[in-house]
Image 1 (spheres, rainbow, N blue to C red):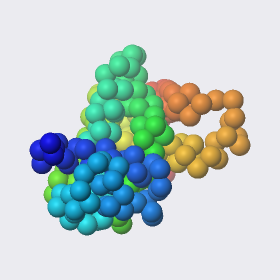
Image 2 (tube, one colour):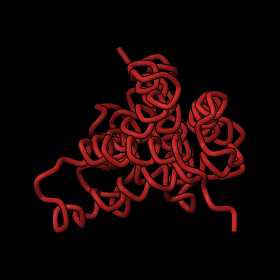
Image 3 (cartoon, rainbow, N blue to C red):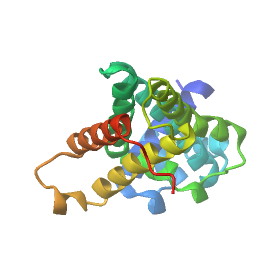
Length: 203
């Protein structure tokens, strides 16, 4: 029995992530995804139309999943609002490394249809989790009075940079004894702690 349309989309998205992990963005094809999913080779075209449509759907699903992971990391953390912000940072790095193929599509906007409304909505969800965590921490006096949007960008840049260094194998050169998740925890706690006690420069 063929999957229902909604189920077919979910099956194809899972197959697309697996295919991306296996062959990379440049070599992925709708036909290969169909083979991996065990459906007719026309099915991905009916659901996604073309490669751009596929990558748009993959990126959308990725941002939705990332938002859920960030919220889970926030909720599982201890230490009040600043501690929950650390949990968001660790969750970001973990997601980027555990689901690297998906993350690579999410961070290459040229692959997707950026004017797609559903994608735009999903892209905003992880940022809302981050901004909410920053604002909650700032309400406790954390951040030295800096503007919350600036603080959020600082936090995002830190963990995204760490995830990129880990993904590219550069971290192994400088810190071979620590896992990326351990470094994410250390960097997040260091950044959050510094902004809890210090006053950021505005020069």
